[in-house]
Length: 264
Image (cartoon, rainbow, N blue to C red; front, side):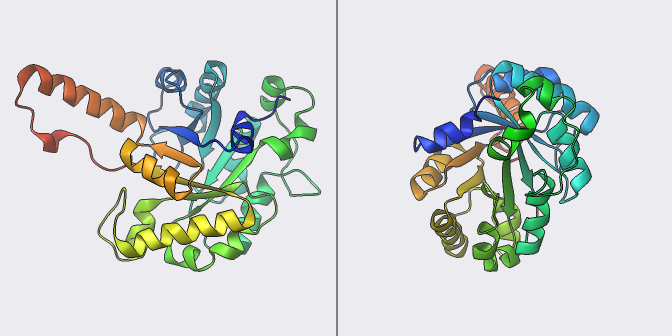
């Protein structure tokens, strides 16, 4: 099995730029993967796709040369294992609030003795080689979403879980949980302080800090802050923004409020 290229980038002290797919289409997934993202994540939580649609999308992303990842709907081992067997090389798991929840998540991504993942890498072994079982622990990425005040309070315990690759910040839920009205690219001092605390905890424990951003400018700021994986918007938002911009450029009167806002 070839090394996961995201690990290679991080080892060289580079950051990773991640694409996001919410549209249930292997064609749009291939277009995203060929756009230059280091990785592309399928959103099975808030996106409009399910497992049967995710499978050909994982194939398209992999064959187009990006690292295929998936955000699962919840911390449920069945869907985590199915997506890994289908060829996802990284899992982002929402609403991880405690160390115990993080241990259950990481355990679902690891074969014994490090975890309890059931053996059956149906497509993964075809896509990545007959040594997939032996190499998976070093190549399958695990990102726990820290997106609540409870998770923030437990972040030190969460990031110290063995086998965790990193933390992925959901800024909308984190802001909501902290009583801030912002839902994307937060600037409220309390939320910014929380982001700093998350990065500090990740750096202390040698794991990767990741975050979802609505804009390229905000992503640059997050990289400067110490985030080493940044997602910019989503396929749906990028499509809608480009379409609205084209119409406005022609007509010159497209109101700005018709453009999509937020991160999804």
